[in-house]
Length: 247
Ligand code: SAH
Image 1: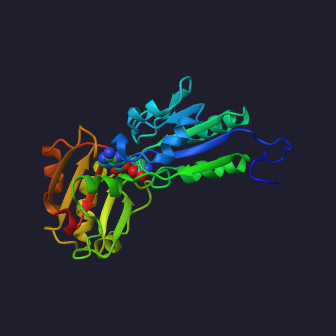
Image 2 (image 1 turned 90 degrees about the horizontal axis):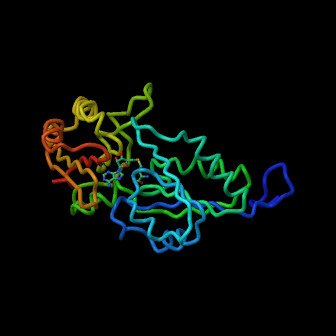
């Protein structure tokens, strides 16, 4: 059986699914491949973090379904999204999930790829510029500047309730920390890192709506980040960059 057959069936699936990364915000950060894919789509399921300007690349008549997944907000359950994609592909349609940043970086793209492949549907993944790299770059923050860091660690600030981040490992990694989905847990993050031995004066940048006209940012230090972020009225979606490169 090849990848384009429904498991348990002799019928080949004629439709196709794309998982498309739309980049961090600025529509000019889309890849040429994403644009080529968007032109082929019959049905687009679009995440709420994605800049609606990307829809200009769909062909006339393509259907658009909003499937927000943002933490805390009303959102479409993941299983329902996967079922929808499978249903459209089985109808012979080309279906795309358009996601912010990169589909495989905190984007549940892995789960979707598995669900679609299990259903025998051909899937193509288009990588996008992830917010954790593209947003700091827009502020001139080089996340792996070799004078200041050995690398970069992409980490989520929104862990499942019973999982605690390994603050000690993070505080002593020698890498720049780029924290996604961390705004609601900012106080816990700042405390956790300092309690694990990260200096209070470690530079931190917090950026909301990076690469978009509504971008707001603050550059501060670890001990002051909670107040500075509140004062700058920075809210989700925001990226937190911790390390000397943020200075
Ligand atoms: N797959 C996405 C990440 C999805 S998780 C990617 O690769 O970028 C959602 C989180 O991404 C947000 O909570 C925020 O931390 C970050 N994010 C996405 N777009 C952003 C933007 N334009 N500015 C700042 N943070 C952003």
